Length: 372
Ligand SMILES: *Cc1c(COP(=O)(O)O)cnc(C)c1O
Image (cartoon, rainbow, N blue to C red):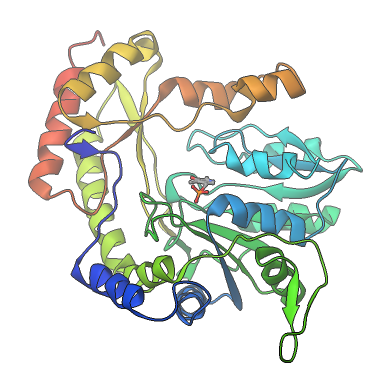
């Protein structure tokens, strides 16, 4: 751990008090907190249903299962994501068709249509770093070809387009509440949808496919699992939701400071955010110029030596051994260029303006040692 991690949780007294209250209550599982957190997610995003899970990974699995993704289906998705985005439809026997990205790390909507075949079932984009994808364009491609859009918005709780929050732009939207995501329940995730049928299926998948009847009677009506969120986790979710906008404001003010400090940089570039969108700023990526690519490891190590807990997001999913062995060698030029140039620098709600100044100074000092 470094002094300034690229992201971290922010747990305050009310979060702790809420958890203690749950621990002293009769319900650690299947009480009222989960329902209350789900309601808060709906109120905040405007989505009709929110179904929590014990991780975004199980939420993705639930979403893919609920809409019937199955063996032989093809899913068009982004390689610049955490492996879980693809892993969960692989588990269902579906095949990933990775689409190249743009220079902001988001799926390139202009490349989607030529990947569509009769087997294509869904498009699964990721709002990388919290910056919303071009969802209207993706939706219209999907509509034209009768495909589903499932948005992995694990980075993007609180992001919005024209003032409308991410959560109900697509058939289903997934959020992660892992420790260092925009808010945390320690581990946790959710699927948001306006579709009643998917919502009912998601609730069954989450809890053994069982429905309760009178007295001791219950019936298992479909395949299911235990993917439920605990009451302790949901309590954290409830208190964290109240701070989400404050967290985002802080991350955006740090990002604006970095933008100003880095605006004339020639040795690396930053990602522009359109005026009509708001980003959760889950990550603040910098992209090294080509002449620095061969020095990336050196630069990364030097950042670490100066207490910057940097990270790289992400190795293209298809470059992992499992995927190479299963699907063979694949190469997408922009995704690879993005991976070669990207470093996520510290940007989170516990960084002060003074810290941000130290971080920006340190980055500029280190980078400027290299040849222009
Ligand atoms: C974190 C993350 C996941 C997985 O989330 P968990 O809650 O850790 O299971 C999936 N997709 C993306 C894009 C993520 O960043």
